[in-house]
Structures are given as structure tokens and as C-alpha cells.
Image 1 (spheres, one colour):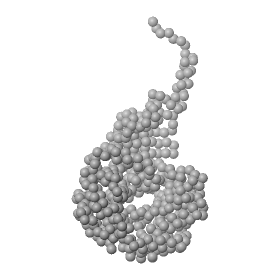
Image 2 (spheres, helix red, strand yellow; image 1 turned 180 degrees about the vertical axis):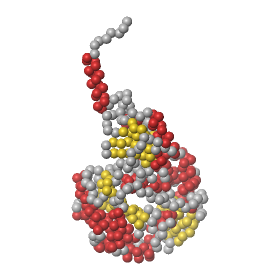
Image 3 (cartoon, rainbow, N blue to C red; image 1 turned 60 degrees about the horizontal axis):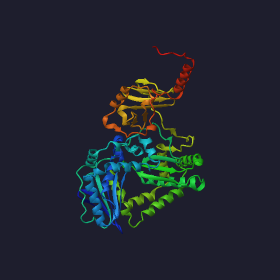
Image 4 (cartoon, rainbow, N blue to C red; image 1 turned 90 degrees about the vertical axis):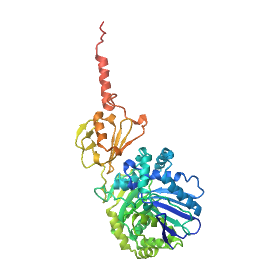
Amino acid sequence: MLRTTEVDGVPALVAPSSGAMSAGLMFRVGQADETLAGHGVTHLVEHLALHDSGMADHHYNGATTSVYTHFHLRGSESDVVAFLGRVCASLADLPMYRLETEKEILRTESRTRGPLPGLALRRYGAQGYGLPGCPEWGLARLGPDDLRRWVARWFTRQNAVLWIAGADIPAGLRLRLPEGERRAVPPAAAVLPRLPAYFTGDDTGVLASAVVRRSTAASVYSGVLERELYRDLRQEGGHSYTASSSYDPRGDGYATVTAYADALPAKQDAVLGGFVAVLARMRRGDLDPRSVAAVRTKALENLNHPEIEATRLPGHALNLLTGQRHLPVDELRAELDAVTAEQVHAVAAEAAASTLLQTPRGTGAVPAGFAAAPTSSPAEAAGRRYAPREAVAARLVIGPDAVGITRPGSRITVRYRDCAALLAWPDGTRRLIGYDGVTLHLEPALWMVPEAALAAVDAAVAADRHIQMPPRDPDAVPRNTAAVPTGPVRRLVETAGALLRRDRPAFRARP
């Protein structure tokens, strides 16, 4: 039976489980609570808090997601007491001597991210739930005081939940955490003018995400979508190896359904076409009742696990942290048993209206019914114009409210008040990222712009959004084309010089 209690003021959930004890300490803080200029702070705190756990014999780990941070382990009762005690002690006094080392570890870890974060960035922009799609640029500017303030605000007893899968709370367990308050999940921003929409990604596969109201029928819809994609793209078409779907509650009454299908370069068009066809079929309500029944039956069978309450503890803890109702097993079983094909169709129609599709980079196909996600800003910056040093059709505009670069078919504008971060390199290069995810990369050597104008851009962006970047490889830095012309300009200068050398008369120096 599930039991609720508390440890040192931290709500605790306990469910019986055989074998070694499992436990977790979950905090309601994640990447969606950060800013782009401080992105990476929660992940960095998690790594530092775990460092003192060392090479333990029991299995332990940590995770930082959009809305929560989780420290968990499986081991003996004494392991649980020691591990959670060390985590709390480390949060109170983070091992700052490890700060730069852990930053490097996080930079290395970031290279293993898959293609999914691109969907989040496109949907939400460089803020909130879109931050998992951005590099952890904040690592460059975070110092000890920043981390201490973050811990004091978010890693508190009122903002935590403990769960234990075992006989009882182990004797001697203490959770020495500071006082604070329960923090609500952040609101979700909307930056896309139209949905459903698509964009071309960097991955060879097809990805799609949709935001739907959280419900048991929505979780069944995700399972049916996976079955339909797998059947069409792998079993019948032979186009994909992996075809999958996931259902992830967001913590605010909504959930994200994400689907993926991989593809070889020669199969990209076929996979994209088949993928969109499945979405359209489900939107129309052309559902095989047997698929709905199969997904429902599998979910019901999972609820028959003898230790079902223990396996649901992490989800129960998250529901408690985010203020979402946690359905008892009997209610969940009744809801699953009542899900119909008509209810799944209703979810499919809801999902279709919010779908964001990522198409493979190697296909030029435009999916029917999807609007192209914007690649340009809606308006050009107003201000003084500066020409490029190369003879190309482009202009840089620096004004009192915004900076922009316009090229044929492309208009990139970042307003200073909406600039989430300004990255600055020692060679003078700047990159401004707007909350809408629009990125303006400014290489001063490529533009005939005075330093005073660039300094005005720096001054217009709030100082707490500036991030100083490490030096770049000299070969990656464009040369100052004012001193050394390149391209057509350089060829023109060289030709003129040759003509002058050939035709000019010889002059003698005056005595």
C-alpha cells in the first residue's frame, strides 16, 4: 500500500518493494526555469551535488529535465541514508573547486544530444521549454555566487519530494535542506505564428511533436501512433528501422507527444510521405480499433505488476511537485478500460492542430497541410545602414531599438529588449539570440561599421545577458577585408595594380 509521510519537512511517498531499496529526491526546478544567459546552472548544480558520492558500490544517478531535477539510487538502507545525506550536504556547500572541471564535463556531454531538442527550440524559442534545445552557454559566465543563489531559491525542503520503494523510511535518514517555497512550473511561450508547421532539420529522420491536454486517452493515442508508424514504415514499407512515440506530461495540465522515424538518405522522401500519411489518417479518424485495443490491453497489463505502486513513485512525486492529480491505480485502470477509438480520434485531431514537423535535410518535399515555420523576422530593424566589405547584396542595420542583417530572402532582426543573450568573442564577433530563437551572427570584419556603432549594440543589451566566449581558432576568424580585399574586390585591385605597373613611366628619385 502507498503511504505518505514526511522527512525533515519534505513530503515523502513510500511503497513496498522487494529486493534492494530504491529512493529518489526530486526538486521542482529544471532547464525551463532558467534564462538563456544562465542556461546550464541547474545541470551544473546537479553534477556538483553528486561529485562527493564518488565511486559507490550501489547504483546512483542524477537527471535534469525541463521541470525537475532528480537524484536517485538503488542499494541498501544504509546506502540510501548515506547518498541522500551527501546530496543535501553538497547542496549546502557545493564543491566549488570542481567548478571548471564539471563545466568541461557538461560541454562534452552536450555533444551526445540527439535531434529532439530542435523541436523544443522552434516551438518555444530560446526561453522556457525551448532552452533544452540550446547549448548551455550560461556555463561560461556562471560563478560560485550564481550557483549558491540558485540553490537557495530552488533546492529547498518545500520544493522537494522524497520517494522510497522499500519497507519503510530507513532509520537515520536526514534531509537537511533550507527553507523555501513550492515553485510553480513556468508558463509555456508560443513563438510560431501558425500551426501545424514544418521546418528542415539537421537529422536524416522525421520528427514531430504536438501539445495536447493531459489525459489517459492522450497516452493511448501516443501508443496507437507508434503502432501505426511502425507498421507502415517498418513492417510494410521497409523504410525505417526505428519508429517510436512518447507521451510526456509537461506539469501544467498538458503533455507533449513526440514521434520519430529514422531514414537512410535514399529513403527520406518515402519516410516523410509515410509519416505524414499516418498523421493525416489518424486526424481523419481512420483508426483500426484493434490498435486501440492492443495499446489499452498492454497498459492494463502493466498495472497488474505486483509492485505497481513502487514503479509509479517517480511519476507520483512529479505530480505532487507540479500540483497535478495523481490517479490511483483503480481509477487509472477504469479510465484505460473506458478509452474508445472515438476518444483517441479526438486527441489525434487536437494533436494535428499543434503539430510541429521536422523534415530531413536531404528532402525538398513540402508536407501537405503544413505551413513553413518562419526563417526570417517579420520586420527589418530601423536605423543606420552599413554596407558589407564584400560586393554582396546585404546590409547591416543598427538602430536605437534593434540590430538586423538583411539579405535576399532573409531578414534577421533582434530587438534589444527581446535579446535573450549576447555572446561576445575576443576577436570582436557578436551573436545576439532573441527570445523567439532568431540568431544574428555579426562578424565585424565583414562589415564597414565603426567600433562605436558596435559598442552601442553592446550597451543596449542588458549586462546580465552578456556572455564572454573563449577565443576562436584563428583560422575561423574572418580577416579584416578593409586591409586585405577579398573576392571580386581583391581581383579588381590586383588587376588595376598590374596595369599601373605595366604602363607607368620610370621615375627617378629626386636628388
